[in-house]
Amino acid sequence: FLGALIVSAVSIVLSLILRDELKGRKRRK
Image (tube, rainbow, N blue to C red; front, side):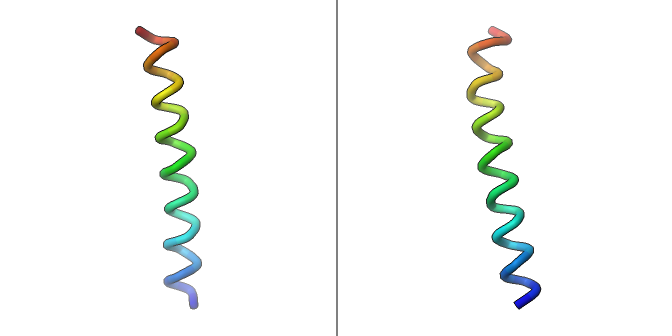
């Protein structure tokens, strides 16, 4: 149970980071 919770949290964080990077690339460059 704990492992699944961590995996779900990490996946959400990674998705948010990836979205920020995609938006940041256009703004930076």
